[in-house]
Image 1 (tube, rainbow, N blue to C red):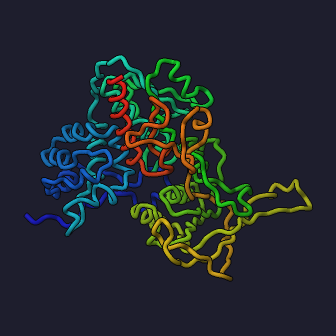
Image 2: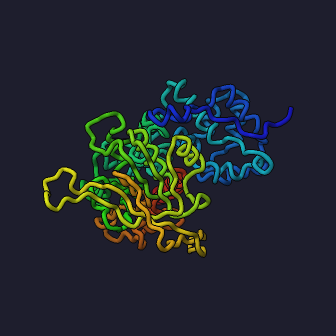
Image 3: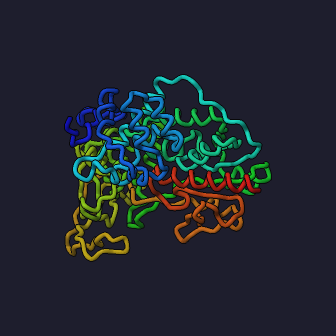
Length: 468
């Protein structure tokens, strides 16, 4: 039988429907589609896809289980390497990682590895009611700072080895960026909650509303009897452009905008204050910018722009997210850069309720020059090309950096000029017994790379404490 050249399409909501609701866009493979997609795998001997996975899931093994209809067996294979399979199957950039190495992709479309991982995780979560077996405790205690992907992965790997692990989360809900940063329509919060519950069943304790650096310090965690600490506090400090008008009412960082919608449930008509409706400009071209733009549409915006200073070829967001945004009606203004946020200011009547609100954004057209240090062509302003976008909300999505709180309250913890914690190849910081990984080290990156860092640190912590 001839091999199907293209991966099976992911069933999805129609664009005209999903643009107005927060239900998950991608609906997932059926059992029949999953088995047919699994049959496309060539089960290569050299397994290049595993090399492309930051957490080294044995991909051909779990796909072979799907071919045989052994979906629980497939789940067991995945969870030997990953603590968050339902999350990874939804938000990991497989097209640049495991699927980019797939042998099928040399001539045809690669196997839909991420879609199959999501299918297996969802099948398990819907059908398996048995709690995982709790490992025998080894008597050692480890503290995890932050419940994002790196922290949860480190916690899961250590719990499976018998460590008593406590995760300290600053917010009121566990999940880190998975719950405050990624919208419901891409990653439903029930999925994250289920993954966290699975870790709790392994014996992991989760303490919310604990801000390490204020409520407790890293040194106090050691005083409490923890023998090692992993810092996975993420990169929650937003960057701004430092242009005139950024302090006007109606200008948000993407971090704040998404947190208000996702974690504080502005999307569910709660009392959380957030600008809804009107005309919105999102500055930036990454996945966070796509999330903010698509969220603004669902919150009732009549027009949403993506304003990005390079061309479509340099757009850093996942191709799938860009395509979804275009299908939903987001207007891409490429090779443009903001120079000023304009606002209403009635100096004659400072009591005017409109005083200080956004009324537009002045931009300038760009052209691409010589490559910069990133290897991408540097955008250069086109003289005399200024124009104004008629908007009343501006969302800045140009990146984030680690919050300096932990660095400022932990003596001897070395950081780089961007505020990222400096670690060695094992995730060890400049402090004995203190490890770090994920966005707290690298700055904003992918979920799966953060998970990979959590795995590396867990292995190193285990070696350190077993030799202690």
